Structure formats: structure tokens, C-alpha cells
Length: 277
Image 1 (cartoon, helix red, strand yellow):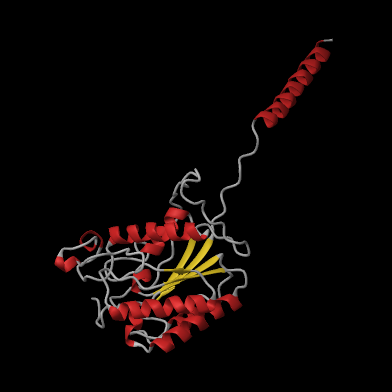
Image 2 (cartoon, rainbow, N blue to C red; image 1 turned 90 degrees about the horizontal axis):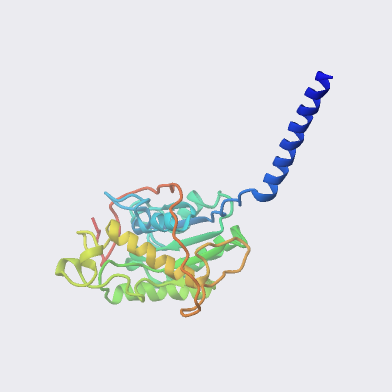
């Protein structure tokens, strides 16, 4: 009789445990999956890869990747351009082949440059930029491609504007979005003269942004990408432009997620027909 009572008590305990587990599953759903991290490749010159004393993680693309939670690969070479090979002897098309073309398709590729093309024929700059955009689109159908024009850490002259206009025309030819830091006046004034926001954001070379300037650049880039609907791109999915001002949409929280890869660093970037540092 005693053994029967023990068995009955054990059965009751097991039943209560199973009932508790079932109730817990009803009231405590499985946690939501982690947000998807877009894969973004960025190709550029020293503004993108970093220069002496400033790593690619500290440069604008690395900063933007942390703010938006991208998984990013940063490549390129200081001093290179669409038509200008720079000290490495490699234009952007060769760097794309070496550093990116063999990789799996990303959600988006951003190509940023033109600073070093001031010494190149503009027809060649435009042709090579269009060809590179076409190569990227053919290599990875469905990948979003964005072209960003040159950024000078000071007010610019005719030569810089001519390069900007050429690259903007190339973006129109290739039918890809164009981001225009010069037109948006991301940097103003002249550090050496103590004018504009260059005093705060630009290095002593008068051309490249400092660490704070790169954070500022990253925020400006993010604002442009949100307008295009590409701050969180998904390969094969159309962009989702942000609501216009006044629509009442909340501003997404910027979250830092993980490290980014480093591009090769170096001291070269042409600005106003000279080496920067």
C-alpha cells in the first residue's frame, strides 16, 4: 500500500511539472531572432581606407558601419582613383578585381572617390567610372550600387568641381544613386585660415577629416542613405526611402555592432594637385 502511495505521489509531481512546462511555453515565447546585419562593401581612396595615424575603423565608412550594424569590408588604396593609378599603380577597377570581385555578393557596394582624379582627363574618368559601375552590377545582380563623389576638407575650386560634375554624370549614365559631399557642403572653410567647420573637423594637412570629422562624415552619409532607403540595404529588394520630414516617423536608434575589416593605410591623397601628407 505504501509503495502505491509513493508511485501516485511521483506521478502527480511529474504531471505538475509537465503542466508547468506547458504553461511556461504559453506565457514565455521564444526570443525574437537577432536583426539581420546588411553586408556592405566600400571601395575608395585614403578618405575611405584611412591614412597615417587614422585607421579604416576610424574613417567614415567604418564609423557608419558601427552606427548602422553593417558587416563591412573596406578596401581600396590611398592615392588611387577611377582613372588615376596612384602610388600603388592600381586604379579602382583593378582594386575591385583584387579585393572584391571574388567575394560573395553583398547587399550594397559603395564606391567613393575622385579626389585623386584631378590630374586625369575627365572623359577617361567618366568612362572608367561608368565601366566600373557596370562591372559591379554584372558581377552581383541585385546588389545595390551607390557612387559617392569626392570630399574635400575645405572650400573647393574649379578643378574639384569639374571632377565632381564628371562623377555625377557617370552615376547618371550608370543609373546609380549619387551622393554629393561637395554639393552638400559637408566641409566648409579652411583649417589653415581658421574658417568654417574645417577648424573642427579637418586634420592639420588641410584636406583629410580627423577622427571627429570622420564621425561627422559618417552621420552625413547615413542621412543620405536613409533618404535613398539604403541605410539597411537588402540585396534584391527595392530601397525603402525614409518618410519625409513631418511624417511622424521615429528616428531609428544607431547601434554599434562588432568590428570592421581594415583597408591598407598610407599617406597619399591628392588634393589641389599635391600630396596630402
